[in-house]
Length: 188
Image (tube, rainbow, N blue to C red; front, side, top):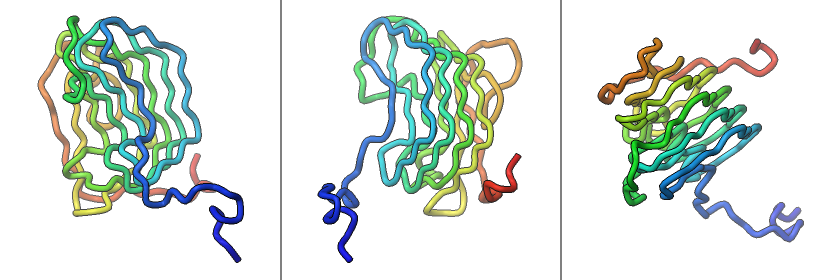
């Protein structure tokens, strides 16, 4: 029996690192809304999903990222409003609001180095209404992983609760036990 790649004419990709899913810009103004990513699988990619920006103006809203499974990815859930690979543009930063991450499972390559939850929002435009539910990621290496948030308001992970929506410095939570993941037939 041959491999799937040779039997179907598909190119062998097991040794390549794919970027994964992302939404990013280095433009001055950005307005994106009503986005749904559902049933996404990544393996050994740069990120499961990453929002990338550095300055600018505009809004990213009403985004749902649900049913993600990833294994050995460099980044997992990453919203970074200070992405250093993008030149800083004028403005208060993109407003990220009403973004839901639901049912994320799997592993990250190094959770103590690259936090599987990393939500770093603009100082002058804190994120609001961010929701992280049913998140169960564990690190491939080491015995701890980090969750990092800054200027991020909502529920779940390391997000701040409340209605103040003011800027605050970076907070880091250390997770020292792998999450319990129930088989699909038992989950509610």
